[in-house]
Length: 388
Image (cartoon, rainbow, N blue to C red):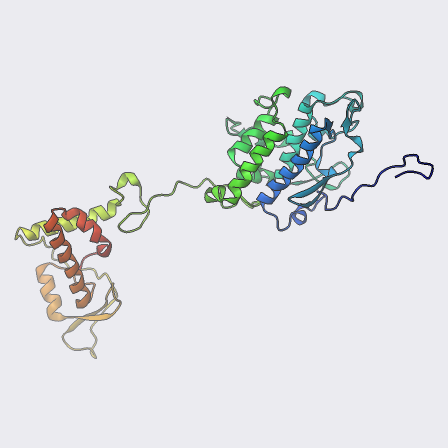
């Protein structure tokens, strides 16, 4: 824009659209996922990186100077104070200020890119760990506290304080971050960390690399497999470390400890198969199966004593544990079974006959190839319930 006499008056700039990060944050990020938030961080970093390539430092890095349209579109505003060439940035927020320049008059020196790298790390931390705090003006603003006031920062892979951590919302979010990001933040803000010194800090490219990897693991489900709340911006609970999944038994399908079984078969199925094998071996040798002590059996299913309107020879009515049908046991049958030392059957005659046929088929196939235990394991899925 020029005056009528040709003198420079100024220039027109596109309007910075979007919203700022002044609370309530729950409304700011309504409908967003953590993957969206990570993409926003990458978008902001790319903008800052483009300025760095032009030898321009933002100087006053803080989330209040950012307007957001979407995860892929954001604007830096209030850029009249950026550091260009030998013109210093005269302002800054203590929370984002590198330790080596805190307390100094910003207008009297030029900041280094390493100092800006500390501010960039703080910016990404505050964006990924959003929480509202009262600032000095009494307004709710994102990250009004200094990062150093967050004790959980000193609980990262490679270093643990061994002290109880504050159960604030930001601490809950921290628990869901992947270990590599926790380590990068912790080593940057911990005065003993390997990324804390001015010459060792991660630059824009280093943070973009880590954030892109984080986002990919959120989108492909890698993190969600162990942490169902990993993609939540505000998880309601801290991360729970889930125990490793136990393998399913190849016979019964129940989870089991591998050390307790054999060849993918749980110890329970092996025990049942061995008992069936023992009975089969004894009977094959012509020896009667061992009988149980002669005592009043305990019913394994619903039963009722015969009433006057039932046939006089019916002693019990029971429900078959396999097919669910009602069957009767006569007094003579009950007396005969007790004399032999057997319990009353829990299955109807048809289901008992079917089970006997399955057992005989297993024994017949097993005798043919000499692998009786393996064959019994293959059929034990149908024999898990107690034998009648």
